[in-house]
Amino acid sequence: MRDTAKVIIGILVFLVLVTTPFWYGKIAAESGKPPVLKVGTAEKECVMSKDFMRANHMDLLNEWRDHVVREADRVYVREDGRRFDKSLGNTCMKCHTDKKEFCDKCHSYSGVKEPFCWDCHNDPNAR
Amino acid sequence: MRGEGRVRTCIGEADDCYVSSSRAQRGDLPDALWKGIAVGLTLLAMTQNALLKAIVEDKKMGVKRRDFFKIAGVTALSALTATKAVSAFAFGPSGHGGETVSKDNAVRWAMVIDTRKCGKGAQCKNCPSLRACHEAHNVPDIPNKKHEVKWIWQDSYDHAFPTQTHALIKDELKTRPVMLLCNHCDNPPCVRVCPTKATFKREQDGLVMMDQHRCIGCRYCMSGCPYGARSFNWVEPKPHIKKINRAYPVRTLGVVEKCTFCAERLAKNQGPICVEACPEKAIVFGNLNDPKSEVRKILSVSDSVRRKPHLGTSPEVYYIM
Ligand code: SF4
Ligand code: SF4
Image (cartoon, rainbow over all chains, first blue to last red; front, side, top):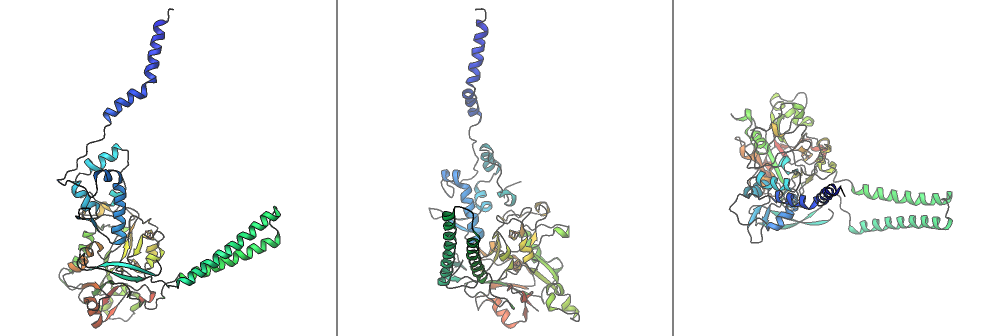
């Protein structure tokens, strides 16, 4: 068989192509690790647990919005009794001082486009 | 919301809260009557349904002339009843003079502006109240008059009270400057026409509020308000704000805005910022439902008017003449 070499090359090319998803996934996972977020505060705890906030901060913000705007209910009491102003600009951003390093970094990693919040709410720490 | 509701109100200290009952201001009907109407409508609908079913099952062929008229009759009857029922409840208190101070609420914020003091001071040329308000609330300063956004502004008596002036009125009064702002009407037409409930009346203290998150920019409220108290953001406002107060949000293109009686300050037991900033002490703010409040005291001894009271909006900004 004079074509052995060609056949082997063919098989190799075939194998490489077929396994593309596996090695591509490996490389992508290396470069696509979740970003490390800079919180920028001495506070130990958020208004809710980290896990809750990671998954549900948008719902919490919507709830706070309705409480403040529609029900004139502006004070949030944490489990340990500490009181917070229900305010994105004046509470959340006091700890998460760097919007670019906190909100934006994770939003862009997860492919979430910039929410409408910032059309009106100021990043109090900008500039 | 119909019937009795319970409202939690805080004045003074945050812990100084108490619960009061509030009633809806629209014509309340006894629950029994409502139930009766609902049952009636359901029965009519059921009859209509049954007729249709019978026809379809029995004949399995098009609807006959006679049957068609039966259905049409029942349908018309139910439609009529529904319209009647709805229209009976669709109107609030009729408003000759709009003498509806909502007595059921614990708090009814109101403002009294003394036009005799306003504009007399050395600083009045560049009204400190107006500036303080617009700076605190990030109200843009847009040169094009057509796109102007304002929460509080000044006009002459003649323009502010078009129904209470005449050709021979004394010059001093005719041209007297008057500060104008949202009247936080007790019966606000802007609220009634808003299709999204973006603007609403806070039942616990009567403030007419804006929920910018819900506003779709249809501007119905602007047609509804007889005082020109609302502004639409025709252009992106941010570039027109000289110095953004980062503790307060800005607005975006396509929403309506207006004075809020400084709801954010009231929450901290502070009065509106225009009251605080007026060097002539021409503006007083307080609870109209408290007979001992300063606003009530002033109103009880002064000659006061309101803007266009005949429209029945029951404005809650009073002017001393
Ligand atoms: S412009 Fe906004 S607030 Fe005004 S009526 Fe339309 S939705 Fe309501
Ligand atoms: S003054 Fe105009 S905007 Fe203000 S509550 Fe009355 S109708 Fe609404």
